[in-house]
Image 1: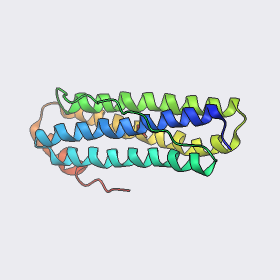
Image 2: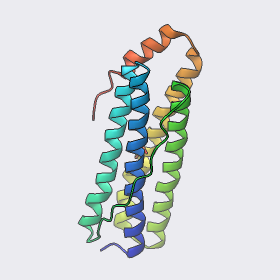
Image 3: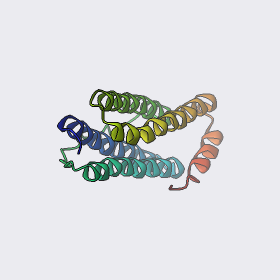
Length: 164
Ligand code: OFO
């Protein structure tokens, strides 16, 4: 059985993961409006992954005799200057999420909850990937600057992202 502290903290994280999905869906909407379908698809796959992250916490809480309590999801930003600004924000957002996951691991350690610590290890690894992918795209966008052909090529490449 999870402690009340873990239950509350994991419920908060469900909200953070669902907010992440909402944020990436909002970015996807802006990419659609910019006619960059590949970028839009990449963001939609990302949004779906975030929902899956939320569901991992959801399932885990019930596996451990806890209870899920859903709260209102904050409205995400809806406008960005360009693709670079969006990916810079995505990168910053993932860094914030990494901090939250590490905070949960600290709490699990404090509570001597080994099962939760093990469960969180998957997220610790996942955040390394999440940050890496967002940062790689930031760096590529910085290199191509405003070259529209390169942006077109990157759009095609991102559009090939497979749903996991
Ligand atoms: Fe759930 O990893 Fe991104 O936010």
